[in-house]
Image (cartoon, rainbow, N blue to C red):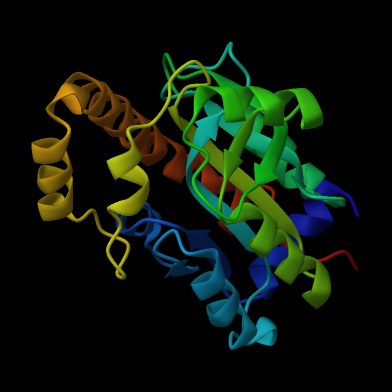
Length: 244
């Protein structure tokens, strides 16, 4: 299907695109007309339950959208990864190529670096630097997150186009403080009280936590910048539609 035909089909299909996120901050950035957003609270089991009850006929595509852990040591906080594929164990899912190409062509994002690369789907936060290095060695992927593999599997089963856009939050050369991986509320927000209790028990982690917070905020700013060209690709130029 040529790009013009894809645009025409997108214009005729009024169904929204499903945006899959892990954190409430990501969901708030993604919200807008033509999009249906769900937030897993960084809980893969919860996301699978949500996806199992979601009506695939009500949408025309799926995008995994949010932050990710860096595996490629050349990537820094705020760098944008547009997935070429998603890997989880022995399974692989391809990203929707024309959408990824359109996203790259539309990426006039100032100083932001935009790359194409693989994503690894994980069932829990990959916090340790050594663990990131192992995943990089095993898969060659650029980044890791906890939603993309579930979103990709759902899209494949429903025969819907899939794409993933992820922004590096914690680079490959940095280990996340342990409290970060356990401080997500059921609604996807950060439990600040739990973070403070963790700091009280481990005051030496303050510097690491501050650096993590700076990188996370940088990633969210970058993610906000990505939203406009994601919408361009999804809702008009390079519309996300199934193959005819």
